[in-house]
Image (tube, rainbow over all chains, first blue to last red):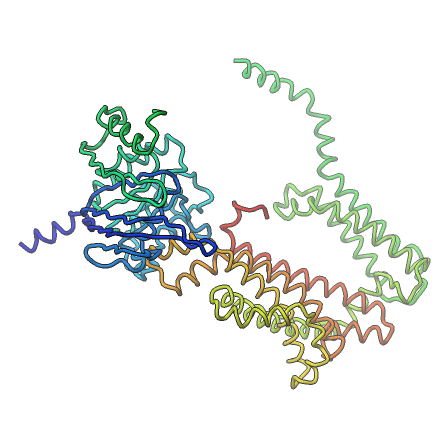
Length: 265
Length: 340
């Protein structure tokens, strides 16, 4: 009994957490005037779900991610991770930003080790850094400095830096936005593989409908600023998905329609 | 295919033209070395050929030394291929040896031999050598005193400046109090404090240390502060989501990111502190190279002044070189991102 439980704990990947966004509104103060960015947003994410947040550029998706990460506090509403209120950043919710924002003065290995070092557990957990670098296929670059990496490699390091913490919720803020299309397609496949293997809940902000449909179980479409949930679309297709899948193409047409782009499609 | 035939042609043509290039490449590689050797031989002869117009004891030895340097220059550059990195370095600096030899010859002839330059004010090279051999103990004492004062003041100033800069950059409350004081007192040249410092401090040594620390501290503070203040928020966001506490944000994010700025401040502080050091030694402290200069002037010992100046410039440039070496070590990560 005990033996199987331990075996299970070892082989079972760390499961994702549930995320509840309840009637969240947020606004920025710009020169004394209040600029509303989120208006009464409620989303409930199941543990292990892959949710894509899609919306026009500047609609407030990234702001929502900052609230989920705990970097900012909402003006109204509540956010909860597994029933616990989100009040401050925690390594169980790690963000991968659009820019890799690697620390240029640290080698690749030291960048990936950042989270463990900050939590004071690096000394006993060094092998986790090696494992995370292996996971993104950059073990041979462990001693390189960030400026020696290509854009795709830097973003992989940023991903490893997030994954080394075994996050329950992985928050992706257009992480592939600045990559060339080939690297992008490769990394999309890698992301799905990682997610399936590790089982973390994933929140992906993107403004690429195709990317959202290839990656996510659920696509949430936002309106223009202030962002409201316009549609919540379930994508019931097995992985790996094909870009040419007519089902996905139809969903994409619908989504672009919601975003007001049906005429151009 | 065409590239094969091209390289074949080159290979077969090489032996025919090899004689002339060999000579020209020899001239190119060793010619300057020969020239340097000639320049130093000329210098040696200029020492020994004519009689000195004054009474200097090191003329003969200087001439011999010049011949030795000429020989080293010749052997070193011609045989550079067998001398490894030392030979390569010598070859690279051979042009400077030519210039130096020519300059010394002109100097020797213009002062010791024909006195074209008025004599007590423009001493010949041998009289400066004489200072180094005959007045060595006093000069060494002065060097030691200067280094001690400079090092103490600089380290204190740099440490306090760095800590102040980090706290202003990090804490708004500290900035509120320290910033106006810095604005008010910082731009004041440290030497303006000299009269006050010398009667408020218990010893002239502590007063000078304070002044050097002040001159160092201001630029280090300002640049550390601006370095910490200009660290991108994205770095803090990343560190915070990874579970970083405030101490980690300061020590592992703000300070390393600000380090390039800190070094600019350290360089500026070093330059400013040299000026204060010399002035303080000339006015208050009865030791050190500044004092030696002052003393030499009092005795109209112009050769001693030049000798002390040369030592001083070697020390200052040595200190700068040392700081560069430290920077290169600490900021090795910058090497690929900015032009040095």
